[in-house]
Image 1 (cartoon, one colour):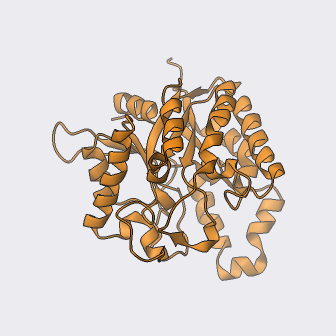
Image 2 (tube, rainbow, N blue to C red):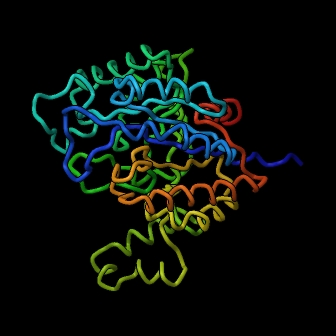
Length: 329
């Protein structure tokens, strides 16, 4: 009897500018002070034995200092530099100082405009001597047109799906019916490469993920909220929402969620955070030095725990997709 496949895992970092998330989506100049903190962060990740994927946007590569950091990180083992995009400040930018929420999602823009922004970002990668093979849409935005573009540009991976989720923002993507499983998007033509959708790892602290998704969505109904069903289930330890996200409050359930994933044996899991959360005040999650320290301590504790589990093996996003293409197609 053959041994079961390991669960491959990596840390993914949305590598981007810092700004006040509550201020909207500005088109003006960007600040990328947080990028200078990435080499020290990477040293901690290397010590924890994990692979890291830095999904990097135009604002970072347009800054000479930021570009130099990403070029240096690309030379390190178990590091991948993927592509990320914030359409509101990626050229060509709108003349207004802010874009509406609807236009902060790339999939809502006219295709000619969206393609121009993708072209600009890919050109910044080429000018930096970097060739991305993985992608995450800003605000988890995705569409079939974007995926076709990525495939034609030589990318293997789209990591934009946030399972079981949508949100109230105008034009937000709808992933309510998507789970944790990877999906191979079949090539349009013979000889084309596929594109693997590798979702973020968001779910529930019990094994029957789809059942508990339906249950908690019912609990979020008007009657369920009145009866405080979700809180009762959480406080009693029956089930909680969880996310392999080092900065988000749902990450507090991470080790319990990982114990469930050990039993479910998905082909991969991905941890996540924003680069701006490494900078005090750079994101809403980390307002103080103590907040940043708490996030990093959580990351090290969890990753060192996973490192000791024989079922888990570090791999970048592209390595995961390459393995899936040879074993699950």
